[in-house]
Image (tube, rainbow, N blue to C red; front, side, top):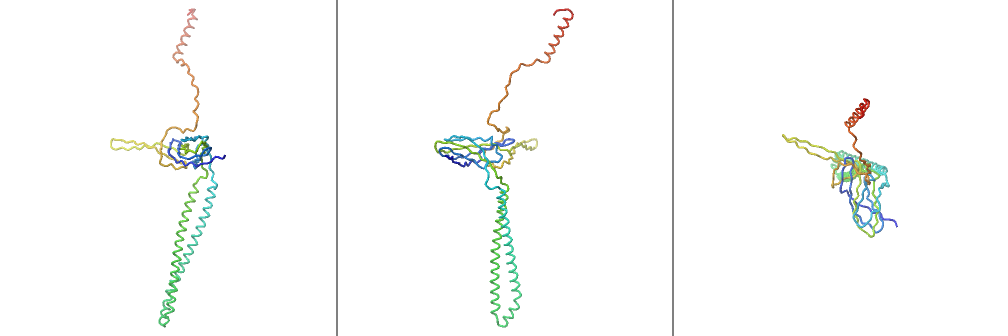
Length: 297
């Protein structure tokens, strides 16, 4: 029987920042079916240390094992960005075509204006000769052409604005894809349950690219000196830390599940002092001198 794969939604609930690294704690709830299942916490930091993953749970199920894997995207960012760049070029070409069409309408507008101004003297002669129907028909034609030009320019201007919005959106998407990292980490939790159950998991792990430093602010007011301490936290882990329980620690990051083995400490008698050794040497010399004089000591 193939075990089911369940996605665990587990936002960050706590962060402990060390001088060189940070431990992230995520918490989420998932309902597992009876039998074996694989619970997956996806989209974790690429710099996650697999040896530091800790998983605890609350519920009627057994954790059989924990594994850290890579998640490879089917489409690499390079190919995705390349496709977006092709779309951007197409949008730019459409924008140029619209600009050319607007210039054509502007030229038509100028032609109609010049035609109207030059036809004034001729119309006066036609009206004086009693042929007013010709100027009237011409004026109606010019008015119709003016209306058509203005309507076309309004449509082209709206299309140009839409193309500019589309171009801005595609540029933002290209920038976002260019910053996207193709591979991420995921934690897979193998579980077994006698019956369907809701399990709450706490998953913690250590990431690099984070730390904190001490900063002191000294302010003197008259004879009073105020000292304020700040802990400045910085991180480039690839994850967004929301508002959560944040703690600063001066300890080193724990990266092992085993307790370090201590070397045996054997008690040794205290060595004789230098003064005691010199006294012993003097006694030996004195005894030897008496023996040389024939005196048995």
